[in-house]
Image 1 (cartoon, rainbow, N blue to C red):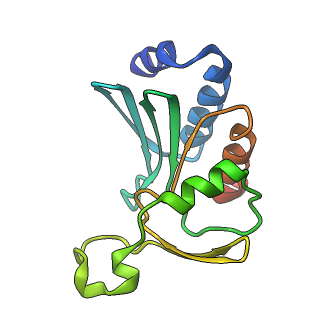
Image 2: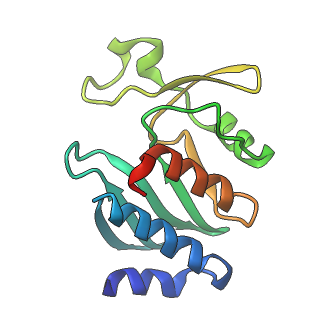
Image 3: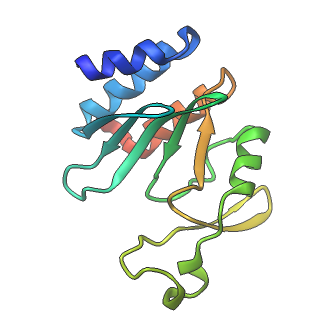
Length: 152
């Protein structure tokens, strides 16, 4: 818990409880946690111990704390803010969905979904990364809880 406390020391006071709550949820479902100190601040990665796939990350940018999600699929039940939709809009498209021969065969296929009447084919590694704000926190929390199911 020591390294996670070091990470929390860099998190804005307004977002500490949110970061702790997400951390606890991931631990309860058995996620493996890896914490690294980077130039921009701490990077906290949560992964599924069985599949070794990333589930979520915390990381810092100049404008603050971000969360990156790697859901198994995009659920239209999640009501995203306008800001979150604009971030998805800006994310890179999935090359592998367009043409599997153009991408690394080890790359995990991205997401193919519809959002607000628009069709998206986005890269798994940058589709769902959001600045942590008072507006985005409840959406991110609901998304994580829905994704992990009753284990939370």
